[in-house]
Image 1 (cartoon, rainbow, N blue to C red):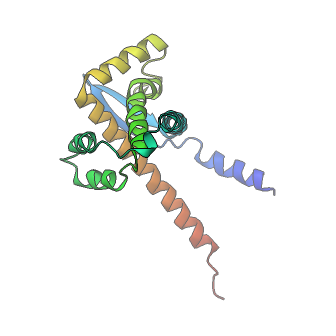
Image 2: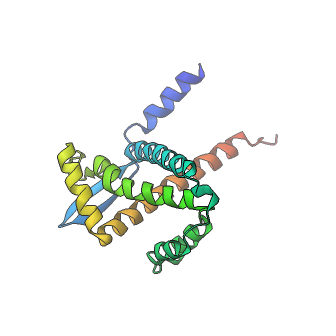
Image 3: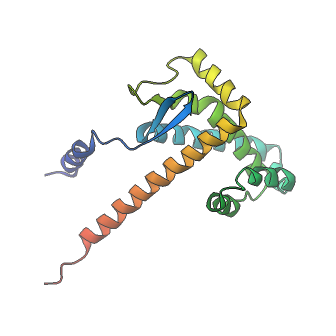
Length: 182
């Protein structure tokens, strides 16, 4: 049996399994974010970050220190979440180009990407199936710091869930490769 055949069998075994995070976005409306959507969003976010960082590097921002006042203001958002705060502090940008690129990407993620990928829990369909609705939700998110924080926290929670599953799979794979010791 070829490696491709094995992968097809494995994929089929997990095809209907949905890795998701579900939350109330407001007004009793339950939404979900699925693994597939998260991966697409993650790829888009990476491209946006790289492009923004390149623009800021061209402007010479990589030669400047970060804006400490802005950094402290950002950390303040997580004052009630000590674990998350510690994670963020550990990922402090090295220069202003990284800091600005991260800020731009975070805002674009909330304003443009999240509205494209959130799904209704009741039927699995996109919450905002067309661009005008996506833009409207993006404006609502940008106008509400509380909604921004809710979504950021849920994305972080979701990413942790995915990381745990990856770690379990990696550990499981390592155990299978261990010699049986006859």
